[in-house]
Length: 304
Image: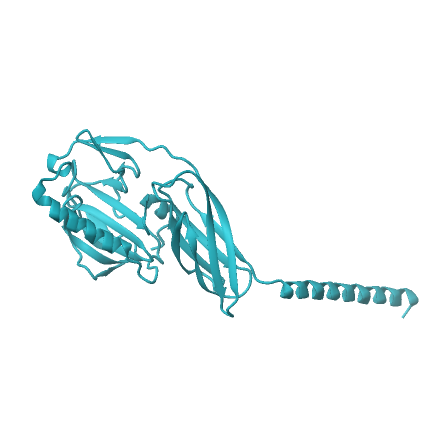
């Protein structure tokens, strides 16, 4: 072997040794670096009435719990597609004021190590239109004989919608319950018979009486009965404080306690309750926040 060859071999060995040493240093630094938690979000836009999907990812290890607050409310998180990832579906309430909000998160790894992170999000202002409708007078100023029923139904809905079942059921995403066009959008200010009422906390789909209405996602039927204002109504519990209310039905095809999957028949479009004609009203609640259902459809999609 020539002196030149020996020199080249020695140089190669030295280079390999340096590379191995550098890799060892990097590995040691990574091993010494404590795990961290990253928080990201997905949304159509950050304005009142929108849904937001939060994703939490640990840099190392498996997450076993995640909790925190977003837009002033606690959220319920659930495991994601990998052991290091969890998610939470949260809502920006229609009454939220524009400004900066901080998502605060606490998590725990399988070995018991705690993690914490925060994410600043800025909510922009949004201007909503006004709709003026003429309905039967008893749905603007109900007769005294109906007041006890109205109060009872309000308490019933509040009790149902404030419950938080322990796991999310929407693994297959969300889809539209009917194919009709949207004829009244979310958040519009409502004036009935020249009297201002609460904003429209849902969306209305055009459709003829009898058109099938299907579950937008997997859930448990927690209410299926006629109500004074919303007419024949079905409420689905999708888990973790997420609910769908499908209203003004002409008929109901499910009973409380039934588990439905996205696309299952739950009823038919009608004109019951406070309406101007046949249509489907869909309200979607995430905790205390009513959000535009189409914002959930867009960020979660329908994977069925």
